[in-house]
Figure 1 (cartoon, one colour):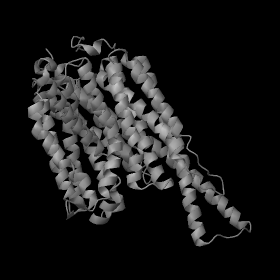
Figure 2: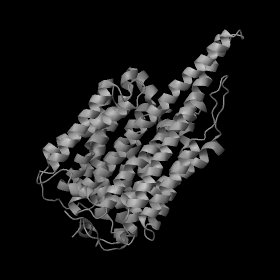
Figure 3: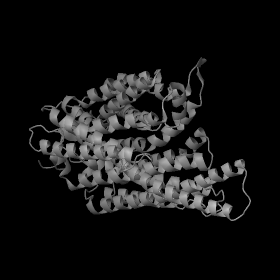
Amino acid sequence: MSDAATSTEPTGTGNARRLRWALVLISVAQLMVVLDGTIVNIALPFIQTDLGISEANLTWVVTGYALAFGSLLLLGGRLGDLYGRRRIFMVGLIVFGVASLLGGLATNEGLLLAARALQGLGAALASPAALALITTTFPAGPQRNRAFAVYAAMSGAGAAVGLLLGGWLTGLDSVLGFDVEGWRLTLLINTPIGLGAAFLAPRFLAESESHKGELDLAGAVLGTLGLLGVVYGVSRAGEPDHGWTDPVTMASLGAGVLLLAVFLLVELRVAHPLLPARVFMDRTRAASFAAMFLAPAAMFAMFFYLTRYVQVVMDYSPIRAGVAFLPFCVGIVVAAGLASNLVNRVDPRYVAGVGTLMAAAGLFGFSRIPYDTTYPVSDVQATYATDLLPFILLMSLGMGATFVPLTLTAVHRLRPEETGIGSGVLNTMQQVGGALGLSVLATLASGVFTERGAELASAAERAMAGGGPRPSEAELAAMQEISANQVFAEGATHAFLVGAAMMLLASIVTFTLLRVRHEELATEDAPIAAP
């Protein structure tokens, strides 16, 4: 008997209301966890000024959260399987809420960075438990598919919502008459939401069964440290000052891969592994994990380069940049709703396959952003309505159609006692894939920046040596700014093009390997993966 069977009440008005509130709690928690990866981005200059954080350490405000979150997801998922998903979900929300309070009240760099890491721990406990709770709360079929659609929409739209909310909160200087630095609100807003959701969870979420087994401490340590090494290494590789050949980057990646290899060997020999090998043995599930590794990598590239483009090249304010991505939020929610209905009638590989193709087309559209890197450089800019908006919508519709079926198939046919770890693996694939993809694309774009920048500098020197009029200091500064913007635009187009190729690869994986039928997603009686 599955967890869903033991925890789902007969259909009725009261139960329907409970299910709606359960979905609200799960969705709010997932949105809060995802948007916290981007909500502080716009606030970074203000944080740096108020707390006196050095430029080198400022990135840790973002990466500290990502490292803790990405490296602890497997452990968080397994704890939910062993000790009850609702319990771990509540613990994660409480940790997240308290950490947000500490970060919002931080008076120095150390306390803020510690709070961000603690937020990552809370997120790693809550996020896989939230996904697993959908399978234990909602009956298989249309109800569960719609719940997965909302979860997927929150996962996809969270980054855009974070940019919008972060821009708005950072611009505030008072709340209810009290003076407060706006950047603190980007953290403090999580405290009432997280603690409130934890308080309401026992009322609307049924506890899943606790399952027999022991926590694999050796596996937990090896897996966590291995993921920490890999996530840190690929994050550092994407930084212009370091790159893939940096000794610390190479050492971190090497140690991470080695620890993960030892982790896999240990998991094959222990009686109660943290990550059972059979989780990967099902071809459909493995394909879902692979596609979910590739798709976020391309999507993160869009957010990273497009948000910088509209602010740096098009000179959008932080709040205007956030508003520019509102259509993405709307599109992904609409597409997720449509996809949840389609998977009841169409095999998921077709829904996800078409979605990845749409997203690839959107990224290809971004790669056509106009720029001019021929000397003398002219100030060429994209037009939002024609050069950006159509492809933002196309990308959002594609990602909504992709996330829903892949989330469903990633936990399909898992044993009841393994849905938590399956959810943890899925979230880990998203985090590691996004970090790796962004690092690869950042390396590519940086190469374009360096090469084209050197060519333009050389051309300018030749022009001035030829006896032409020398520009004033103000004219020279303006020329340099325009040149930097155009070089950035060219580098971004290269990153978008490679992102489109990544999405096409995800489409190939989806069409060829995702073989589960839509009829299977509507029943609890599908065969469980063999041991």
